[in-house]
Image (tube, rainbow, N blue to C red; front, side, top):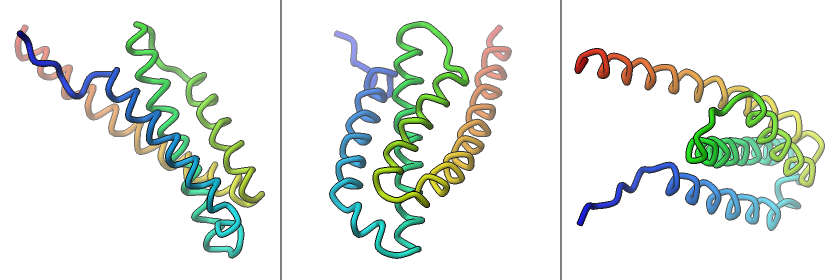
Length: 127
């Protein structure tokens, strides 16, 4: 009997969805507090950008398990969902969510490039 991997796209998709639901629920439960001061409003935008990252992870893993590649459409859909969530807290959260999401997307893209290079080097080593 073979052991199942804990890091497959299916598990990652499930965990990112569950974290999205929990994070969104907590954000909505505390939206009055997040809209109360400037600092909390920035925090509300950051929390919404984390929602962006979780939705992007979910979509990416869903597309990987379906056998297709993730492109800009997934990024735009994830950003739209995050911006709608941010808009339920405060108008300024929309702007801060967008700015934090751009930063997160840059970092995810950079990490992805590093990981792809490592995979290419390993595959060349064994060929």
